[in-house]
Image 1 (cartoon, rainbow, N blue to C red):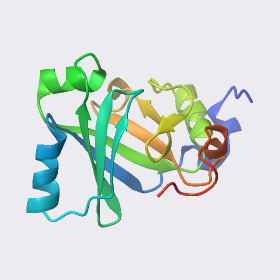
Image 2 (spheres, helix red, strand yellow):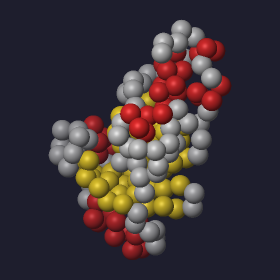
Image 3 (cartoon, helix red, strand yellow):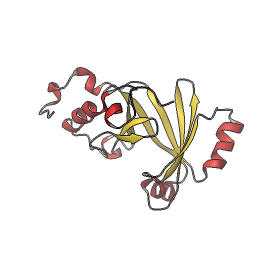
Image 4 (cartoon, helix red, strand yellow):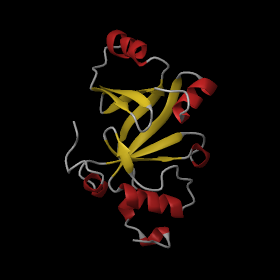
Length: 162
């Protein structure tokens, strides 16, 4: 479905939901886990290697959101370049949206520079990134709420993967 104007899209297409997670790039995931889990007392929900992104990640729930630790598995990725240039620290914020494809369409019409023009598989559901140039210097990730339209098309099924 092609839309010519942002006003042609449903109102919900641009509504951001909760903050799903805040991501921190780390050099050594195991060392970072010793701090976030063992010192700060956060519970570890998931550790996963994502070969397509060449990163190893961990999710640690805190309150109604999560901290995602991201560590590159080779030195050729955007995450590795970020780490080399800026060191460890804040990487991106992720917001939930009800319909990721519709949100991307609307944001594109509004002139937002999209890193991903269509939903792709993420560790916890369909995701897409918005370029920091359009977001006042912040890398923004969008994740589709569980059961949204992209879940089935990307092979997630219709329920939360947890």
